[in-house]
Length: 367
Length: 247
Image (cartoon, rainbow over all chains, first blue to last red):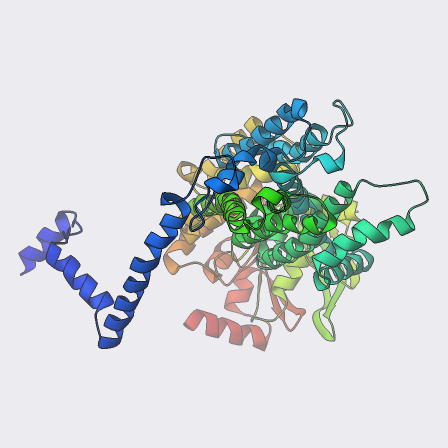
């Protein structure tokens, strides 16, 4: 007996490998799906539903759907008709943007998408990534709205995915820094700063975004001196940034409060000042802890850009709906909404994936 | 002002609301001296040591560190904090930075040194506390004793004149206490001015120049280790020693 024990101790014990056989799989299926009569009924019912509907959905979406043709006559009334979607794709992407200036949209798409590999890369110094993120809104504005180096594009010429992308990226990039300042302000030791930030957050959180958007588009003009106008796009961005910043500020404040006070004390004890302590000790830890909540907020913000449709700006949902007001294609909203869903899903899912990547990366440095 | 004095407290009082945490504290610590502060829990030891680098403010009296009088002036606070290094009970290493980055942080962001120079200084100190081989690990990967040694190295990076230890071994497993005490012994031998709040009576006996015994916010006894351990002046200290040494 004793010799056996020493033998085990001396050779590194290996974790035994268990290979699952077909029998094991059958057992797992039976245990999980057919364990009781109720289980069996539920399993069968769900299977029946899936078997009936998945082929119907696929058939509608693809197999019986019509992809080419010129008029409505070419469509199959019992399946999707992708003809208008395909024909109007350019319009969906660029909106009414001047055709000879479309390279500007293409460039900004590329710049925006470039942020992704940059965010994912681990070798790139953080300073460069931060610089990129801060400059991106300015560059996008200059490219898509013009006015500085390039010719000015009227706000009505921005539409479709271009506008959604433009609003989404700029609002996302700018709202985080504003949120950080608000969160720190709400914890400030100076009462005035604390009251202003708290009051702002409470007010903005308690009023619907739509109200602010309407106010930005209608009411602001009442208070500005005659003749002065602020571009509606700017006003909308302002609302999107400052509303979502209030929510993010609360997420970040929660994360700051979760940081042990010893962290701040250790930094102060070394003679580090408030700002450096916040920038190097508190914020890196707080932002890491708030990644899941912040990513959810970013996704929500991106989808909130559809609200600008109410103010007459044709973002992606607006342009899609517009084509189905067209006499030829009237009433074919379903296909359009499938496209819009797909568009938003692709982008929001990518953001979520980035969040998951961040969480994995953070886990590696946390024990 | 006597330049040989590292720390001078005159009539220091501190309140937390209606609770008086420090009562008329008078204490002078000479340069190069090792002073151990002990006493039952809640006696104000930690509060006292935390007022010395302004982590806690005091309400009345005067505290001079290295000749600088502590006031509300941020410049003075910064000066005092730069001349003192602090080691905490729970280490308080920065979990999102490697051991090396923890030690270069102060050099880079407080002293404004470059990366390479700070790393050289930090590595030298990590070698001193015998943990140089762990420099690229994160604090969470180290044992408690190792973390506390890193924390001591980190506090030393800014070459402080005075080291403050706030129960540096209380959160450690018994087997790790000695490695931390060893580092503290080396420091004490090298002539560092040290003020330690600790229950390690062995360390106090061997290396303290003086022992300060506190109860309910007051210093009730200051004596040399020989006196303190063989013939404590107060009944309270006798009881404390009996309890702490018999367990």
